[in-house]
Image 1 (cartoon, rainbow, N blue to C red):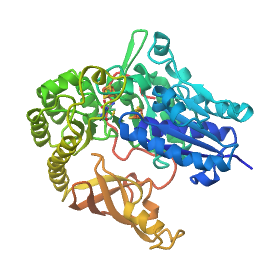
Image 2: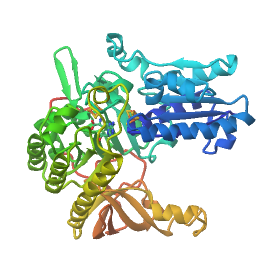
Image 3: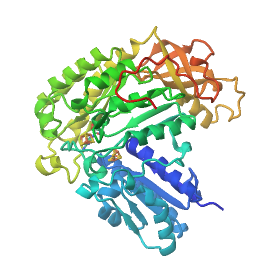
Image 4: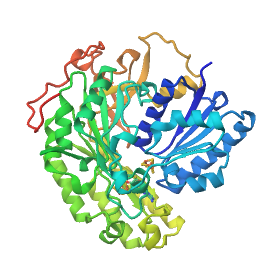
Length: 500
Ligand code: SAH
Ligand code: SF4
Ligand code: F3S
């Protein structure tokens, strides 16, 4: 019988993709995936270190698995990803029953390490070279980057996939662990990325999300050819069957006009920019080492909206960073009021060992103040989100239908609806994203899942648009799995690379 592997993933899209790649590799070695820990022989935890809360989540999951392991002495427990990279010693101390610790750069070795644990019962440790010069040259070789066997069943949906275009980060914001957990910034060669996108599209994928910690800093130089993110996107834009190209997350200082031109002019590019500001106060931004001022950010935002009209923008904020006074917090309040983000992710500062901030500045904002500031900022953002969503009422948007809505899914799993199979013509509540990354909910049939439809927006909450499918026809008559023309006629390509 095939051995079963159970995996839990926390953290960002990088981790979601890494888990997909690890499971793909394990399947190649005869493993099956299970979502029930009781059935598993191998337990993997793909971890995040960005805030203390994420780490505690992993330690409590490990605590639960310890009990299971007592009954299954042959089981293998592995900690993967950012915590593995950063805290091997702590993991060994707090969870000595962990059999393998595998850093972000060594994930390709997971099948081999599982086999070694099995054969020797010796703990296995594999972490990458970190930020040394050798680390800078690791590039794709040691990173699990692309493997055609990557596991589609782990994707957000069968027709959406993440594609890593950049590894690591060189920005060193003072609060952040990512440069040490993911190593130096490296941009993958464009040919590899285009090849990967083509293969994904051949597998039925319609939307790719290009991911990098500062994705718009992507640049690949080879001889005298320089490929920027805009060129990379242009080079994949006309792949038949590919409908949408997204990219996250952007760094405010690297938001160049050529990229905004691409967002405006290339119809498959999603009109959405996630550009975290982190704070509205210049002194705080300086201590964070973000390398811009609030004024610079607001000018950049104006440029985004001028060069890519209709683009929606979201942001991240950290509240209660070291030395954030009430006055400096009020500057974040002013910025969020003025910026009119579609949505914002707001985090309470969490001191991280090994970062510059932990070394240089005391974590001096009390927890209850962080909490209050978090709520205050959220309240203003929610008002703006409501206004942003309400402004869409009366418009018609294109939605790539992802599947049953959350309400529908919980009705199915809560037994309030008969389990499948329902007739394909049964009406259910469906969900998907618009081209501006708004979540849209509407009624339709199962048949629409995986297709792009037009939805007339009738109502809105701060986080969701509600509407009616205009016709039962899908945009571009895209009902077969045959490669098809894009929903919108491609425009002439003015970027510098040949099309693939
Ligand atoms: N690379 C992305 C973000 C990576 S981490 C970027 O630079 O935009 C995602 C978000 O977590 C950050 O934008 C920041 O808002 C938050 N974050 C990072 N470190 C944090 C810390 N120590 N405490 C609280 N929030 C943090
Ligand atoms: Fe962290 Fe800053 Fe790099 Fe983002 S840009 S990953 S916040 S160091
Ligand atoms: Fe977390 Fe690592 Fe991503 S620290 S946010 S999983 S890069």
